[in-house]
Length: 154
Image (cartoon, rainbow, N blue to C red; front, side, top):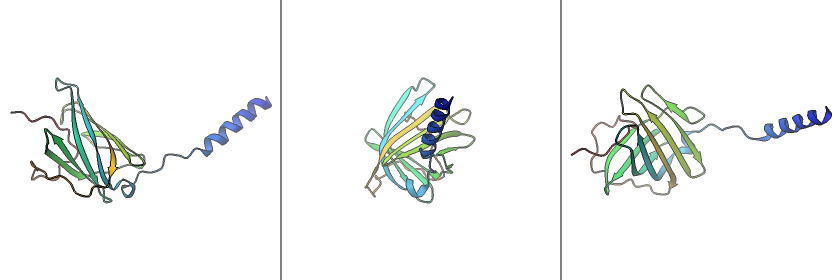
């Protein structure tokens, strides 16, 4: 009986020493991240991959630059409302953002009827770059935020 109580006590002490998940803040996230974006569609589109640059400001503005065939075709920008645990979502999507040192991992699930059924995954690292690429096909609508992208249809 004493051995079992001692084991439970040791487990409780060890678990109390493990730090809890700390809140993710935009001050920590602010910067430029360079990485890869993968979009996995439930439809015949299958899996699409892009190079991506993500810029996050301390105010929570997130801007994505997507490279396709050597050109940046589309940028989305908007304010992200982030929960302390790194989750976010609305009526169109839900996702999770994780920062490990210089590495950013973002996974977002978009669902019908507003979007095709798609999971967008970005994995990148913080860059010292302060310049963003010349954007060749910018939209006049800068309120678009985090929408899934697909290859242009001719």
